[in-house]
Length: 112
Image 1 (cartoon, rainbow, N blue to C red):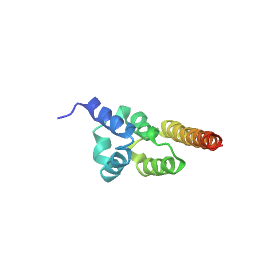
Image 2: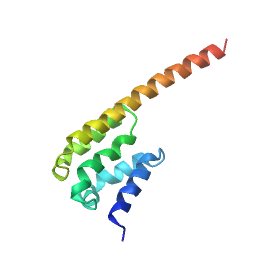
Image 3: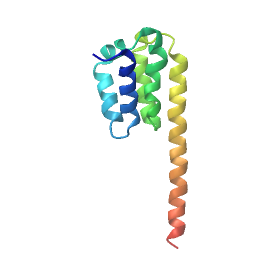
Image 4: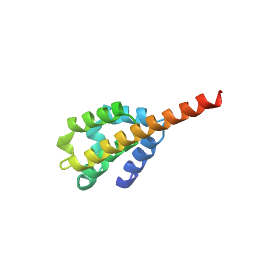
């Protein structure tokens, strides 16, 4: 049997790895109530929204937000954590886009 803090550590690690982010999100969606139920209620509203902070696109941020909106009943008071998580996703997506733009411009210059 896992300790309460081990559940969140495992989910964080799997969400942080690019190779397992989408699979972990799919797993969370498939049995959200059971998985959230493993996290103590007193911490759940702060912890669960943060799982989505590893997404780095506007589309993924929207999917994560929709997922949390569907499960708000288990996450009372999660609005601030949700807003912070979506902001993190949006900033990551913008930074990735700007970095990609700069890299492409650098590659174009290198071909000269």
